[in-house]
Length: 354
Image (cartoon, rainbow, N blue to C red; front, side, top):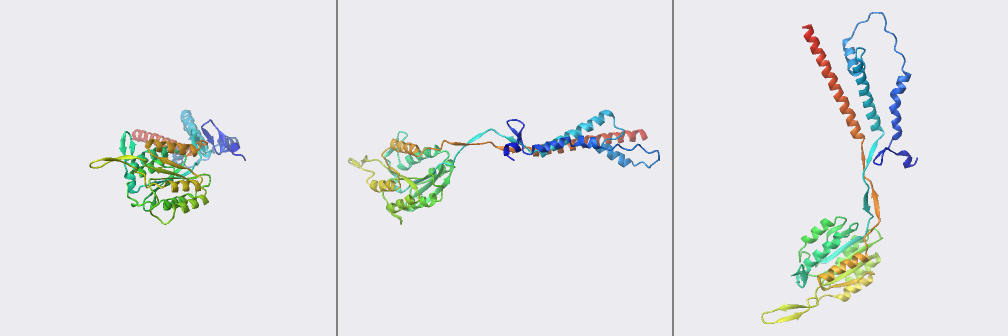
Protein backbone atom coordinates (compact mmCIF):
# COMPACT_ATOMS: atom_id res chain seq x y z
CA UNK A 1 0.00 0.00 0.00
CA UNK A 2 1.31 3.42 -0.89
CA UNK A 3 2.33 5.74 1.91
CA UNK A 4 -0.27 8.31 0.90
CA UNK A 5 -2.98 5.69 1.23
CA UNK A 6 -1.79 4.59 4.66
CA UNK A 7 -1.87 8.10 6.09
CA UNK A 8 -5.04 10.17 6.25
CA UNK A 9 -4.65 13.84 7.09
CA UNK A 10 -7.13 15.44 9.45
CA UNK A 11 -5.67 18.83 8.55
CA UNK A 12 -2.44 20.26 7.23
CA UNK A 13 -0.79 19.55 10.59
CA UNK A 14 -2.25 16.23 11.86
CA UNK A 15 -1.95 12.76 10.36
CA UNK A 16 -3.28 9.39 11.54
CA UNK A 17 -0.79 6.59 10.89
CA UNK A 18 -3.38 3.85 11.59
CA UNK A 19 -6.59 5.53 10.36
CA UNK A 20 -8.62 2.34 9.96
CA UNK A 21 -8.41 1.73 13.70
CA UNK A 22 -11.07 4.46 13.88
CA UNK A 23 -13.66 1.82 12.90
CA UNK A 24 -13.42 0.57 16.48
CA UNK A 25 -15.49 3.61 17.49
CA UNK A 26 -18.52 1.69 16.18
CA UNK A 27 -17.79 -1.34 18.34
CA UNK A 28 -20.08 -0.28 21.25
CA UNK A 29 -22.95 0.14 18.80
CA UNK A 30 -22.30 -3.36 17.49
CA UNK A 31 -22.39 -4.79 21.00
CA UNK A 32 -25.62 -2.94 21.69
CA UNK A 33 -27.19 -4.32 18.53
CA UNK A 34 -26.07 -7.87 19.32
CA UNK A 35 -26.88 -7.61 23.01
CA UNK A 36 -29.15 -10.40 24.27
CA UNK A 37 -32.09 -9.18 26.19
CA UNK A 38 -31.63 -9.64 29.91
CA UNK A 39 -34.03 -12.19 31.48
CA UNK A 40 -36.89 -10.91 33.57
CA UNK A 41 -36.20 -10.91 37.29
CA UNK A 42 -37.17 -14.14 39.01
CA UNK A 43 -39.91 -14.23 41.62
CA UNK A 44 -37.81 -16.58 43.70
CA UNK A 45 -36.26 -14.90 46.68
CA UNK A 46 -32.46 -14.75 46.63
CA UNK A 47 -29.97 -13.40 49.09
CA UNK A 48 -28.85 -9.82 48.48
CA UNK A 49 -25.12 -9.08 48.25
CA UNK A 50 -24.51 -5.38 49.04
CA UNK A 51 -20.88 -5.50 47.84
CA UNK A 52 -21.93 -6.56 44.36
CA UNK A 53 -24.53 -3.83 44.15
CA UNK A 54 -21.95 -1.28 45.30
CA UNK A 55 -19.41 -2.41 42.70
CA UNK A 56 -21.98 -2.35 39.93
CA UNK A 57 -23.07 1.11 40.99
CA UNK A 58 -19.46 2.31 40.89
CA UNK A 59 -18.30 0.72 37.64
CA UNK A 60 -21.48 0.33 35.64
CA UNK A 61 -25.08 1.35 35.56
CA UNK A 62 -27.10 0.63 38.66
CA UNK A 63 -30.84 0.18 38.46
CA UNK A 64 -31.27 2.87 41.08
CA UNK A 65 -29.38 5.46 39.09
CA UNK A 66 -31.30 8.59 38.26
CA UNK A 67 -31.61 9.50 34.54
CA UNK A 68 -29.08 12.32 35.03
CA UNK A 69 -26.49 9.99 36.60
CA UNK A 70 -27.20 7.37 33.96
CA UNK A 71 -26.56 9.92 31.21
CA UNK A 72 -23.34 11.19 32.83
CA UNK A 73 -21.96 7.64 33.03
CA UNK A 74 -22.75 7.06 29.39
CA UNK A 75 -20.98 10.25 28.39
CA UNK A 76 -17.99 9.32 30.55
CA UNK A 77 -17.66 5.88 28.95
CA UNK A 78 -18.12 7.35 25.48
CA UNK A 79 -15.41 9.97 26.05
CA UNK A 80 -13.06 7.35 27.47
CA UNK A 81 -13.64 5.07 24.49
CA UNK A 82 -13.10 7.88 21.97
CA UNK A 83 -9.78 8.87 23.58
CA UNK A 84 -8.51 5.29 23.50
CA UNK A 85 -9.54 4.74 19.88
CA UNK A 86 -7.97 8.04 18.81
CA UNK A 87 -4.76 7.04 20.59
CA UNK A 88 -4.80 3.70 18.74
CA UNK A 89 -5.06 5.57 15.43
CA UNK A 90 -1.63 7.06 16.24
CA UNK A 91 -2.18 10.75 15.52
CA UNK A 92 1.01 12.60 14.62
CA UNK A 93 1.60 16.34 14.58
CA UNK A 94 3.45 17.55 11.48
CA UNK A 95 5.44 20.70 12.25
CA UNK A 96 6.33 23.61 10.02
CA UNK A 97 8.65 22.87 7.12
CA UNK A 98 12.34 23.40 7.90
CA UNK A 99 14.85 23.81 5.08
CA UNK A 100 18.12 21.91 5.48
CA UNK A 101 21.07 22.36 3.15
CA UNK A 102 22.35 19.31 1.38
CA UNK A 103 25.75 18.10 2.52
CA UNK A 104 28.28 20.54 1.11
CA UNK A 105 32.03 20.40 0.78
CA UNK A 106 34.57 18.90 3.13
CA UNK A 107 36.75 21.95 3.68
CA UNK A 108 39.96 21.70 5.70
CA UNK A 109 41.83 24.84 6.79
CA UNK A 110 45.57 24.46 7.46
CA UNK A 111 47.10 27.50 9.19
CA UNK A 112 50.73 28.19 10.00
CA UNK A 113 51.24 29.13 13.68
CA UNK A 114 55.03 29.22 13.70
CA UNK A 115 56.62 32.22 15.53
CA UNK A 116 57.14 34.10 12.23
CA UNK A 117 53.38 34.76 12.20
CA UNK A 118 53.92 37.34 14.96
CA UNK A 119 55.27 39.84 12.40
CA UNK A 120 53.28 43.08 12.63
CA UNK A 121 53.13 44.05 8.96
CA UNK A 122 49.37 44.01 8.32
CA UNK A 123 46.69 46.39 9.63
CA UNK A 124 43.59 45.29 11.52
CA UNK A 125 40.83 47.75 12.38
CA UNK A 126 43.08 50.71 11.73
CA UNK A 127 46.02 49.48 13.78
CA UNK A 128 49.07 47.42 12.94
CA UNK A 129 48.54 43.83 14.05
CA UNK A 130 50.29 40.48 13.99
CA UNK A 131 49.72 38.29 10.98
CA UNK A 132 48.09 35.57 13.09
CA UNK A 133 45.52 38.03 14.47
CA UNK A 134 44.60 39.17 10.96
CA UNK A 135 44.28 35.54 9.85
CA UNK A 136 42.07 34.67 12.81
CA UNK A 137 39.74 37.56 12.00
CA UNK A 138 39.42 36.85 8.27
CA UNK A 139 39.26 33.05 8.51
CA UNK A 140 36.63 33.24 11.26
CA UNK A 141 34.33 35.29 9.02
CA UNK A 142 35.01 32.97 6.08
CA UNK A 143 34.10 29.85 8.10
CA UNK A 144 30.92 31.44 9.46
CA UNK A 145 29.66 32.01 5.92
CA UNK A 146 30.20 28.37 4.94
CA UNK A 147 26.90 27.05 6.27
CA UNK A 148 26.32 23.53 4.98
CA UNK A 149 30.02 22.65 4.66
CA UNK A 150 32.00 20.44 7.00
CA UNK A 151 34.96 22.53 8.10
CA UNK A 152 38.05 21.30 9.92
CA UNK A 153 41.13 23.08 11.24
CA UNK A 154 44.76 21.96 11.15
CA UNK A 155 47.40 24.04 12.92
CA UNK A 156 51.03 23.42 12.04
CA UNK A 157 54.52 24.44 13.08
CA UNK A 158 57.25 21.87 13.50
CA UNK A 159 54.48 19.30 13.33
CA UNK A 160 50.79 19.50 12.38
CA UNK A 161 47.82 18.47 14.43
CA UNK A 162 44.05 18.58 14.05
CA UNK A 163 42.71 21.38 16.22
CA UNK A 164 39.11 20.82 15.07
CA UNK A 165 37.88 17.78 13.06
CA UNK A 166 35.59 18.12 10.06
CA UNK A 167 32.24 19.30 11.38
CA UNK A 168 29.25 21.53 10.67
CA UNK A 169 29.98 23.23 14.02
CA UNK A 170 31.75 26.37 12.81
CA UNK A 171 31.20 28.07 16.16
CA UNK A 172 33.40 25.57 18.00
CA UNK A 173 35.97 25.65 15.20
CA UNK A 174 36.19 29.44 15.47
CA UNK A 175 36.59 29.24 19.24
CA UNK A 176 39.48 26.79 18.89
CA UNK A 177 41.07 29.00 16.23
CA UNK A 178 40.91 32.05 18.50
CA UNK A 179 42.53 30.07 21.34
CA UNK A 180 45.53 29.07 19.22
CA UNK A 181 48.84 30.77 20.04
CA UNK A 182 52.13 31.03 18.22
CA UNK A 183 54.69 28.35 18.87
CA UNK A 184 52.24 25.85 20.31
CA UNK A 185 53.13 23.44 17.48
CA UNK A 186 56.85 24.21 17.43
CA UNK A 187 59.10 26.86 15.95
CA UNK A 188 59.61 25.46 12.44
CA UNK A 189 57.24 25.01 9.47
CA UNK A 190 56.24 21.51 8.33
CA UNK A 191 54.13 22.31 5.27
CA UNK A 192 54.44 18.85 3.68
CA UNK A 193 53.37 17.08 6.88
CA UNK A 194 50.39 19.44 7.22
CA UNK A 195 49.23 18.54 3.70
CA UNK A 196 49.69 14.83 4.41
CA UNK A 197 47.59 15.09 7.58
CA UNK A 198 44.85 16.91 5.65
CA UNK A 199 44.90 14.15 3.00
CA UNK A 200 44.51 11.54 5.72
CA UNK A 201 41.42 13.33 7.06
CA UNK A 202 39.87 14.13 3.68
CA UNK A 203 40.48 10.99 1.63
CA UNK A 204 37.73 9.01 3.38
CA UNK A 205 35.15 11.72 2.79
CA UNK A 206 32.71 11.66 -0.18
CA UNK A 207 34.38 12.45 -3.47
CA UNK A 208 32.18 15.30 -4.65
CA UNK A 209 34.38 18.02 -3.14
CA UNK A 210 37.47 17.75 -0.96
CA UNK A 211 39.20 21.07 -0.46
CA UNK A 212 42.25 22.19 1.53
CA UNK A 213 43.12 25.86 2.06
CA UNK A 214 46.71 26.13 3.25
CA UNK A 215 48.04 29.41 4.62
CA UNK A 216 51.66 30.11 5.50
CA UNK A 217 54.18 32.95 5.60
CA UNK A 218 57.33 30.90 5.10
CA UNK A 219 58.98 27.87 3.55
CA UNK A 220 59.06 24.20 4.44
CA UNK A 221 61.73 23.88 7.15
CA UNK A 222 60.65 20.74 9.00
CA UNK A 223 58.76 17.49 8.64
CA UNK A 224 59.29 14.14 6.97
CA UNK A 225 57.31 14.64 3.74
CA UNK A 226 58.33 17.16 1.07
CA UNK A 227 55.47 19.49 0.15
CA UNK A 228 55.61 18.49 -3.53
CA UNK A 229 55.24 14.79 -2.67
CA UNK A 230 52.37 15.58 -0.32
CA UNK A 231 50.67 17.54 -3.10
CA UNK A 232 50.98 14.56 -5.44
CA UNK A 233 49.36 12.38 -2.79
CA UNK A 234 46.52 14.91 -2.50
CA UNK A 235 46.02 14.86 -6.27
CA UNK A 236 45.71 11.07 -6.22
CA UNK A 237 42.81 11.40 -3.78
CA UNK A 238 41.14 14.23 -5.76
CA UNK A 239 41.85 16.84 -3.09
CA UNK A 240 42.10 20.39 -4.39
CA UNK A 241 44.54 22.69 -2.57
CA UNK A 242 44.34 26.47 -2.49
CA UNK A 243 47.57 27.93 -1.14
CA UNK A 244 47.84 31.40 0.41
CA UNK A 245 51.12 33.18 1.02
CA UNK A 246 50.76 35.92 3.61
CA UNK A 247 52.94 38.88 4.52
CA UNK A 248 53.78 42.36 3.27
CA UNK A 249 56.53 42.89 0.68
CA UNK A 250 57.87 45.99 2.37
CA UNK A 251 57.78 47.67 5.75
CA UNK A 252 59.76 50.21 7.72
CA UNK A 253 62.02 49.01 10.50
CA UNK A 254 63.03 51.54 13.14
CA UNK A 255 66.50 51.09 14.63
CA UNK A 256 68.41 53.29 17.05
CA UNK A 257 69.60 55.77 14.46
CA UNK A 258 67.93 55.06 11.14
CA UNK A 259 64.71 53.82 9.57
CA UNK A 260 65.17 51.26 6.84
CA UNK A 261 62.99 49.40 4.37
CA UNK A 262 62.87 45.63 4.79
CA UNK A 263 61.04 42.73 3.16
CA UNK A 264 59.25 40.83 5.97
CA UNK A 265 58.26 38.09 3.51
CA UNK A 266 61.75 37.23 2.32
CA UNK A 267 61.37 33.64 3.59
CA UNK A 268 58.10 33.01 1.78
CA UNK A 269 58.55 30.21 -0.79
CA UNK A 270 56.05 31.28 -3.43
CA UNK A 271 57.35 28.84 -6.01
CA UNK A 272 56.63 25.88 -3.72
CA UNK A 273 53.12 27.15 -2.92
CA UNK A 274 52.40 27.65 -6.61
CA UNK A 275 53.59 24.13 -7.40
CA UNK A 276 51.35 22.64 -4.71
CA UNK A 277 48.31 24.45 -6.09
CA UNK A 278 49.07 23.53 -9.72
CA UNK A 279 49.59 19.85 -8.85
CA UNK A 280 46.12 19.60 -7.31
CA UNK A 281 44.35 21.87 -9.85
CA UNK A 282 43.99 24.55 -7.22
CA UNK A 283 45.20 28.16 -7.15
CA UNK A 284 47.91 30.15 -5.41
CA UNK A 285 47.05 33.50 -3.82
CA UNK A 286 49.30 36.22 -2.43
CA UNK A 287 48.03 38.27 0.53
CA UNK A 288 50.13 41.39 1.17
CA UNK A 289 47.49 43.16 3.24
CA UNK A 290 44.33 42.53 5.21
CA UNK A 291 42.28 43.63 2.21
CA UNK A 292 44.12 41.14 0.02
CA UNK A 293 43.41 38.32 2.46
CA UNK A 294 39.72 39.20 2.68
CA UNK A 295 39.50 39.31 -1.12
CA UNK A 296 41.24 35.93 -1.40
CA UNK A 297 38.76 34.16 0.86
CA UNK A 298 35.89 35.88 -0.95
CA UNK A 299 37.30 34.57 -4.22
CA UNK A 300 37.56 31.05 -2.79
CA UNK A 301 33.91 31.39 -1.75
CA UNK A 302 33.07 32.01 -5.41
CA UNK A 303 35.30 29.23 -6.71
CA UNK A 304 33.80 26.75 -4.24
CA UNK A 305 30.17 27.98 -4.05
CA UNK A 306 28.02 27.01 -1.10
CA UNK A 307 25.35 24.41 -1.83
CA UNK A 308 22.08 26.23 -2.52
CA UNK A 309 19.80 23.24 -3.02
CA UNK A 310 17.70 22.52 0.06
CA UNK A 311 16.00 19.53 1.63
CA UNK A 312 12.66 20.15 3.29
CA UNK A 313 12.11 18.48 6.63
CA UNK A 314 8.92 18.57 8.68
CA UNK A 315 9.38 17.53 12.31
CA UNK A 316 6.92 14.90 13.53
CA UNK A 317 5.61 14.41 17.05
CA UNK A 318 3.44 11.49 18.19
CA UNK A 319 0.27 12.52 20.09
CA UNK A 320 -0.96 9.11 21.28
CA UNK A 321 0.77 9.56 24.62
CA UNK A 322 -1.25 12.68 25.39
CA UNK A 323 -4.53 10.97 24.50
CA UNK A 324 -3.74 7.98 26.70
CA UNK A 325 -2.72 10.31 29.51
CA UNK A 326 -6.01 12.20 29.09
CA UNK A 327 -7.96 8.93 29.21
CA UNK A 328 -6.19 7.87 32.42
CA UNK A 329 -6.77 11.29 33.98
CA UNK A 330 -10.46 11.18 33.01
CA UNK A 331 -10.87 7.71 34.50
CA UNK A 332 -9.08 8.60 37.74
CA UNK A 333 -11.02 11.85 38.06
CA UNK A 334 -14.32 10.13 37.48
CA UNK A 335 -13.59 7.41 40.03
CA UNK A 336 -12.64 10.02 42.59
CA UNK A 337 -16.00 11.72 42.08
CA UNK A 338 -17.80 8.37 42.47
CA UNK A 339 -15.90 7.56 45.66
CA UNK A 340 -16.69 10.97 47.11
CA UNK A 341 -20.37 10.50 46.29
CA UNK A 342 -20.39 7.04 47.91
CA UNK A 343 -18.69 8.45 50.99
CA UNK A 344 -21.33 11.17 51.26
CA UNK A 345 -24.13 8.58 50.87
CA UNK A 346 -22.68 6.36 53.60
CA UNK A 347 -22.19 9.33 55.90
CA UNK A 348 -25.80 10.41 55.42
CA UNK A 349 -27.01 6.85 56.02
CA UNK A 350 -24.92 6.67 59.18
CA UNK A 351 -26.44 9.89 60.47
CA UNK A 352 -29.97 8.64 59.71
CA UNK A 353 -29.33 5.32 61.43
CA UNK A 354 -27.78 7.09 64.38
